[in-house]
Length: 197
Image (cartoon, rainbow, N blue to C red; front, top):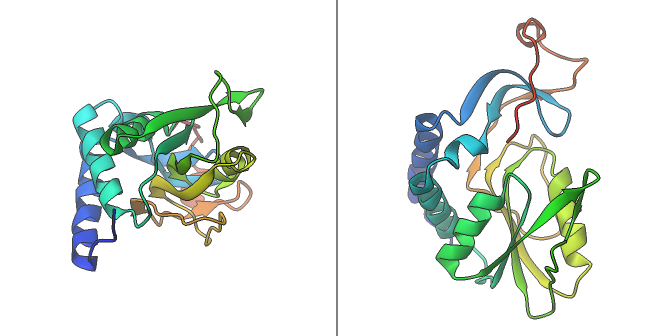
């Protein structure tokens, strides 16, 4: 697992965007993001995850982009990161576990456990402000495992994120986001929706 050249990165970015378009994963309208921010664009990971050949390819591209030691455990927060995380684990021949929501907070359940023998890659679908990643990392880091990095299909953050470990997304999408009381006119005229990822 190593960093590719700039040319190869640009080509993989184009391939990723093409996959998103083919699967109708990039939506336009007025969306309420998980972070509470608003946007005229939404990346709906579930659309891509309908097609396992696309998931296989995206996982392959993401693995090729990672510049970390090989993990032996993949962890994903439910629901968005599950399909991608499991496919990455399959391709890397790793163990796969997931965090799930309990009373609207992430939790490690189902007798899943982490120990000092686990070298973890945290896999998410979309990162906007990083709140769910930070919540997942707090749970993972409360164990004795080693967290190698965080990765996601899409990084749509508008500020630099610092998780205390490397963050290596597959694709950076620079769509503007807005506070609900600071919407541009074109968004304020559209009824907002809150699609799932």
